[in-house]
Image (cartoon, rainbow, N blue to C red; front, side, top):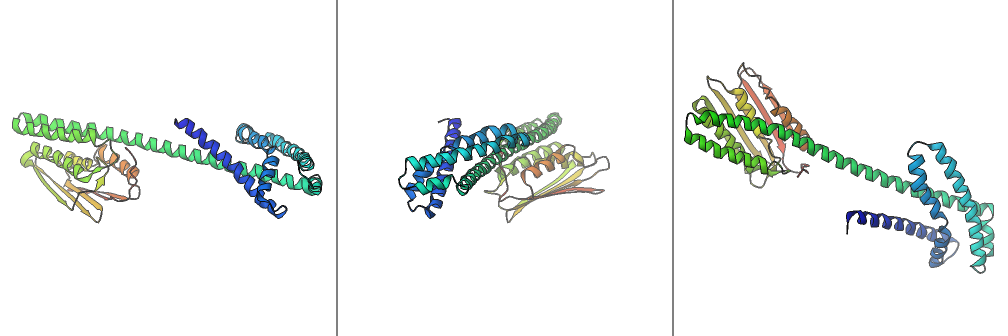
Length: 349
């Protein structure tokens, strides 16, 4: 069954349920006058038939074309006379029904043409119109909220895709440049770098399309990148990597750690040598990731597009579930990231 047909059947079921509830409620109310529930249900089905055209004329024509477009006086000029005419018609309909089809109900028939009986019918129509409008407005509000959530999700997914597309080419350029430099120095090492780069690219192609990946996989990808840079710069780079904690079974959004390390390599490099410290610790389901690097006067330490993009991704993926701090000192640049890995709203796939 198509989704469109399912929606139609669901809508039809809701309308049927509305009328069933209305008839049952009114039948129970009438027990105060006539102690026969089945008889009351049968009577209310008959007496409720004239109300159906007015209810749906109001819901599907007057409200969309007048009320929702701010034409309030035009709406009132139609709905109020409609309610009055329906009240008059229902008074005579009730009188005819109880006179012709029910025995010993003369007093009841006369009641409906009295002022009190007319007031009862009018109140019944007003309650039915109000109740149906309330449910209709709630349904419209729910549909708009659901659409708004879907649009917001699509917007976030598009924005995340754009952010990732900005990061990936930046990393690829740096990695290829490293391999290019190494090829003139050591062919064997350059081949190893190509294998490592292949693993990194494979990770980006297949893993970054997921909403979340294994933390261990993300760390392995990070190690591959570090080894590429370590091989390229040799003794010029003093690189220390310290990873603690049991990473198995934990998930994280992809490509959150690499931009921080990439930024450290980019802005600490110097012909006189440089140092980088990478510390990752997982404790009590909180990931603490800190990267420090030497800060030279020729480097702003701001990280180009990498860190600003990372900040935006963190706000989208881990709202109120992360801390992101940057310290830019004379000789030291440090980035500290903390993420609560449990109960975070990752919904992108």
